Length: 353
Figure (cartoon, rainbow, N blue to C red):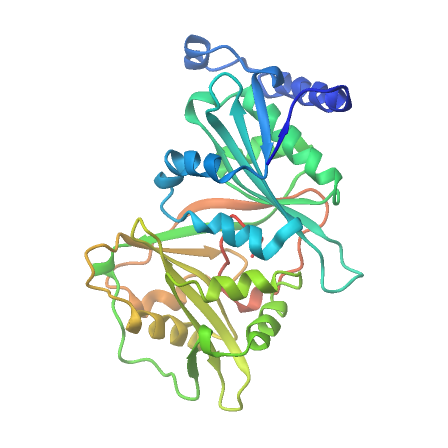
């Protein structure tokens, strides 16, 4: 665990970020912010890199357990799979050690050396009592300090309420795809009998060669994340499936994880065709305890540049619905993505697709 405190080495960075706080607060702080607290400065906080297990437990006892699609060992998985290409940061009050902000970054080197690397930023959370121009300055400092270590090519899936922060930090931010999310109660989901699945063989992700999964993943997202995608598809709390054609070629894979909250998150679902995507989802549903009262809801995302939500209609007892969730944002070069095979993206807090 490393704690960053004010020093001469960082004074220029802090000054720039605190100047940005003025930019964020051009309309002045919110009324409730004026009444409840004084604006924070960098002298009031510690920025903790690679937080200890004790700090992570503190986070889990607060916001961590409120997040429906997150579990404690996700952080362990990210650290194990990405190693020095992953950095987790907590911003804590010096006065009492309270965690008021989180952020992490992943470095994604391209498989093709001629392509440009990018750094994915996610897991941004700010305690509701500390949201304001001062908190934006901490986000700005953490992002830009980390980016200088790798490349000047940040990428993030940005919630609508955070778009202005990203734009003001980087100035020339561009928008890629739009990410939507659909929620369905378990009793709104059915397993259709009449689906043409001829010629498709489904296997558990735990039973297939690593290379089958990695090679197919590389055809969609040509950046190094092999250890992570294997770990994710084989998560003990999930159902991971790999689809093959009659010649033994991989034609898709998908995973659904049931989180402690009961949230059933389908992520990702990659396939050569709608027929294959439906075969994978049906195979997952057939193994799930759909009548388990502990199941809260199904959480399924879609991207406007991909295959939409038509594929799921045979599985619904209700009308399909979706809500705006986020935008892919970047400053220079968008990640290379084969959208034609994407039905549902991978976990949105870890990578671009």
